[in-house]
Every structure is written in C-alpha cells, then in structure tokens.
Length: 136
Image (cartoon, rainbow, N blue to C red; front, side, top):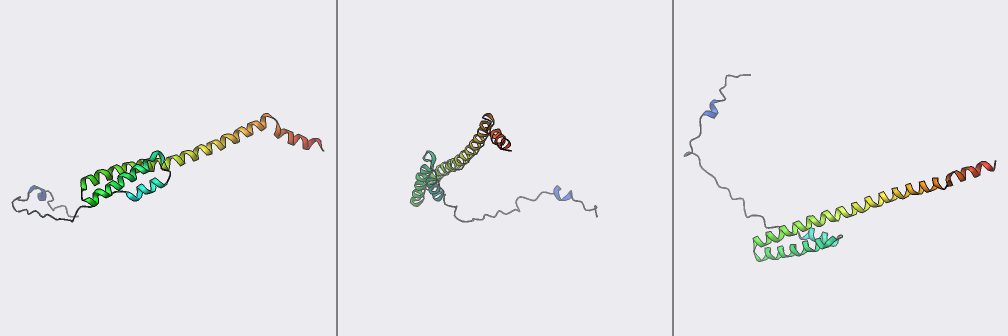
C-alpha cells in the first residue's frame, strides 16, 4: 500500500466561490394533499367506536371538497384532522378486540380453575374412584 500520496493537501485548498455555478432543478408540481377517504370509510364501517371513524369520514370529505375547489391549505388542514381521527379509530379498532380476547381467555382459565377447585372440595373425583374399588 502506497502511503506517499498526500491526502491532506486535498482539504487545504478551498474552491473559489466565484467559479461555482448553481443549478436549480424543478421536479414538478407538489403532491396534492391527501384526504384519507378510503381509510376513513373502512374505520366508519368497522366497529366505529366513539364515532371516530365517522368524524374522520367527515373531515376526509371536507378535505376532498377543498381540494376540488383549489384551496390547498384548507385541504391539508382537513386532511391532517382526518388522519388524526383515523389513527385514533384504528388504534381503538385493533385494541378493543384484542382486549376482549384477552379477557375471554383469562375468564376461561379462571372458570376452569374454579371448577377443578370445586371438584376437589366436594370430593367428586375421589367418589368416582372409590366407587370402582368397592365393586371388586
């Protein structure tokens, strides 16, 4: 490996700013504001807890109306509100069934433990095995 190459000299000289040219590239029109209408519709139709999906649907329709009318700022504002309501509705729509499932599972486990304890308390398990021994 050749280490004789002076790498530090490259950083000692600074480019002359008068020689630098600037290039401006225009990519195109900015993306239109999103209205999240499909997401709002799904949240409205599925579980719609606390009417959050319906509120998101209202703001989505308002955002779409403002976008059609050409008011980009109002469309962005309504789109952000629709997105917030959609996030809340989605969290509730996912959390509530999972919570109910966990409660059902823990309830089933608890009931099975209570039944086993009741059988032991009433000696019903021993009664069946004792009855078989007496017949012999």
